[in-house]
Image (tube, rainbow, N blue to C red; front, side):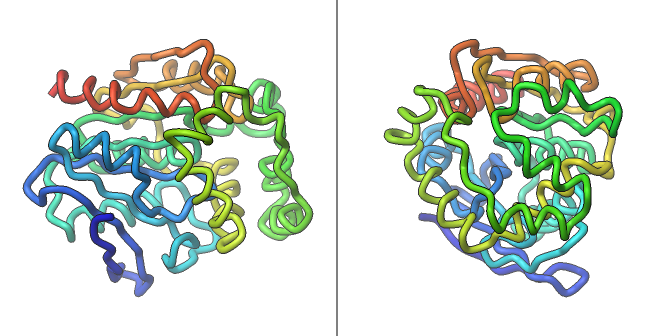
Length: 277
């Protein structure tokens, strides 16, 4: 599906980027979750294609063939994507992030308001408030072991990854239904990516519990925060934290959705951007 590019970055690293759709069209820039390969997922590509939009997805450092960058911040990863968009000639885009991709979509919007005219997060993570203020941030997570271990550094997070197993209670019945249907490609990609590039998820978690390198107050474009009320991975209060801090945010709460089933809102989110443009 689409084209695969290996782009050189200014510091000599390699960034793998996937691209589909008319080069002249406005683009949906998909920021993948954790762990994911960065390859184009069919439901994302199909939703964009049905609206005449181009879709671009970059594998964050440490995933999908992109050169690892231990210690990267959220802003570092967003800067890599901005470089790729310039190289591909994208002039106007919607930054979309799912789960761990949410912070990176917001960072791109903060760094490149000349390029990003809107942003969408789906079950996106909010900035970590710091130790002593994190009870609410962790509350409601079915499994917070990875993020808590990241607070103690990269070595601790990597040790956790050696023995960690997926907590099946993290997903709701609707999540499992989505993974058995429209979003089956996401589940297959996440499983493969977790095994192939465990360091990518380690670096993601470290970035989430450290300063992002950009502030939410710097996200000028209109932003849609889409959140499942039954999410057990990134609970609903993360959406509240985002909306409270973003200058131009709107909350779409889907009370029955979990972490994966909320992604069914993607086509409507694309329509939101097109109608607002």
